Image (cartoon, rainbow, N blue to C red):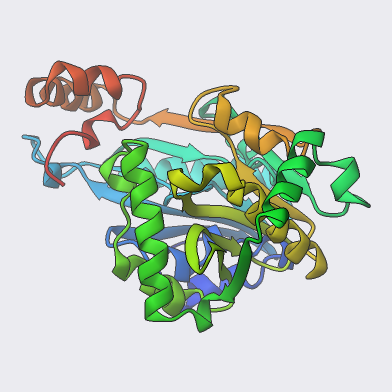
Amino acid sequence: MSVELLTPSDSKWSAYFYALPSHLQDPYLSAEYYALTSKEAQCFVYTQEENIFFYPFIKTNINALGYDLDKNYYDIEGAYGYNGAIIKDDTEKDFILKAREAFIQYCKDANIIAEFTRFNPLYKNHTYFADMNVVVANQNIIVDLKIEDIWMNSYEHSTRKNVKKAIRSNLTHQIIEAKDVSEADIAIFCDVYWQTMQRNSADDIYFFSRDYFRSIKEKLPNNALFIFISYEHVVISAELVLHNNYVAYSFLGGTLEEYFAYRPNDYLKHLLIETLQNRGLDFFILGGGVNLNDGIFNYKKNFAKNGVHPFYIGKSLYNTEIYHSIVKQWREKVDLSTQEKYSSYLLKYHYGVAD
């Protein structure tokens, strides 16, 4: 039995990552992806004989957020996207229990007060965290790329109609591997993406910088692609997809509101599905809506009418006394609207205070 705590710059992170079965070498768990964050990223690895429990996360110093505490305390959560642990052989139930026990002991020893995880709906890795408070937070859409004739057997009629309208509107497209994306491409993508975030009044955390997208090109040159949809030489919709050889994720994107009538986003998703299927991938995860069964969710469901999967999150508290003390200080620091907006968040005290 061995326990290791690694950083993205440690070559052992990637060594363990590539020792996992190829379909589990998920881009959201790679050292390169976690290197994109400016925060402290770590990977907890528990091994026994040939088996591996592999769990990356971001560790935040709570004191640095501006709270008055008797000593340094921390919390952990996965990076943006899906997270949680991956296990090389998850049929060994005793191994999973021991790995999780070792992780809990690490949290207690390291003054970690809380843990938050967004589990992957494809891998169903919430089942590895029996000690956590695991709940269904939403529903996600997964397109099964193995379905024969996806056009007829997965899409709703309305989606087929919208794609045909986009084609009649003479929309054009360009799909570019991250390694080949230009500075001009990144600038165009950012413009469409930022306008979409502004229109939707998104939180500041979703306004990724241009440098972030440059880093995608640098860190994930072969595991990300950009797609651009244009009307009369103007890019009106764009999306960034992360992928390995098994699964792809709809990561970040946007569409200019004044061009909605041309159905560019339907066309974009359709082209991506065709491309990923032709490349031999098995699944394309579109995600869900902001709220259960909202318009965004129902739009995504139109591409996979039988592709609804529960989306689980997990919460753990390791020091309830300190946690409630921090929440109390947070309430004293932020206004009532901020308190109401983030009331259900485990790590609510991250919001509305200086980072």
